[in-house]
Image (cartoon, rainbow, N blue to C red):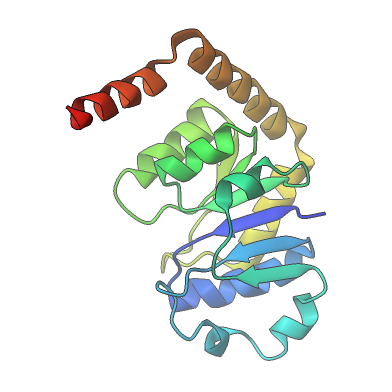
Length: 182
């Protein structure tokens, strides 16, 4: 059973802490690291990391995100707070761990954590580093507090009902495609 799905853009200090935090939380995981974003990732692994987490973790350079997040074994999604990824998670009722890096991602994090209450943000130390213990603590808090999953499921239903009732996004896209064809 997968518990964590991860999609992040990391600096080297945060990468090392993330790897050690991931090991510390002792949960099954899928970690998608695009090869065009992180060069020489294996060089950054702590000695023996792959051997220690290999039986409970899968690290890959690509996965079908929508399909993965729709799988019933997914308990949370740790991500960069991009809007498209947020919608993929929201449409499946998945609680979120937020690691924004730029632009609108911080506003998305605010809605996820403070308005919708379906996720948690990480606290950074003075050097803007997220410690391995902080990573472990937030994973445990998110997975042990049923409120986040319950709120995510309520939001999922609202999202689905809105799409069914209005169909605006679909109709707008369909209209745009028709306009382009003309």
